[in-house]
Figure 1 (cartoon, rainbow, N blue to C red):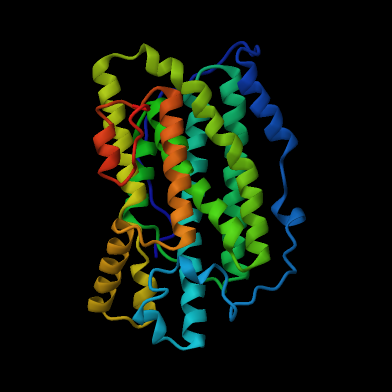
Figure 2: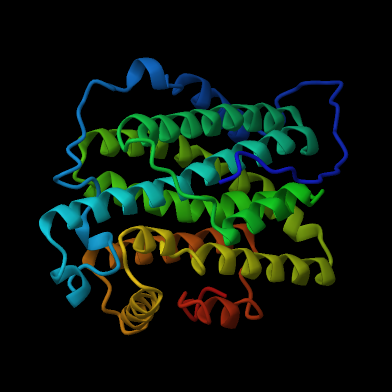
Length: 326
């Protein structure tokens, strides 16, 4: 796979000439970020072994678990599938953390106010650390097995990096992509078989808990002041970003590497879709879905972006909006 790609970008950089505390809540996030920094090299016990034969993540997270496809696999093949599925899932998260680092580096330039700039600078460091720790885990503990960046994920981040407007970057990153990532990291922290991965995910969650606070503090005033046409555009963008995050992420390459035929992979995709639509997801997947959807609805409501116009678009993605919310 390619090791890099270029994204055209153009935006105005805001150079501050005075540095007062104007948003105490934002400054508090910055102070908390300084206090809570951790070091991948020093604070993670990399001497811990990872038992790949036992599996790294919960088997229930794998699409074919509990199906005839799973039943026909030997214990060794199930362990290999778990290994490859984990590598795929963490690869997707790795590209997301690196993309977040790049978007936040742009936010440092484009937002106004010292408090916002200071906090975004700390998030750049956080996302760099997350990229480092996931890359090291994949390299050292999963044998250097990496999977390519999914097209949907690449399109999302290329769009965020290419758009000059900081509210678009903030909605796409901190309200959509990071809400998905937080729910996923939480599930991995609670259910993974490997204690080292659980520790890494818990540390990442400690940082992520601050990141969405930026959107909660910075976006409400912006959304109060914009016109109807611009609000409609942001609603459409939010739906588009959710489509990119919630659809199209399927480990096709993993099943290919395990020797499944194209017809079998198509059947696995169909089974997964039927399970999701029929509410037959595993307990872990069901919990992840509820956590993700409730957080999305709560955050969209808090910033003032949830509307009756957006409701049917969310529900088309399986996100139920309570009647009293929109």
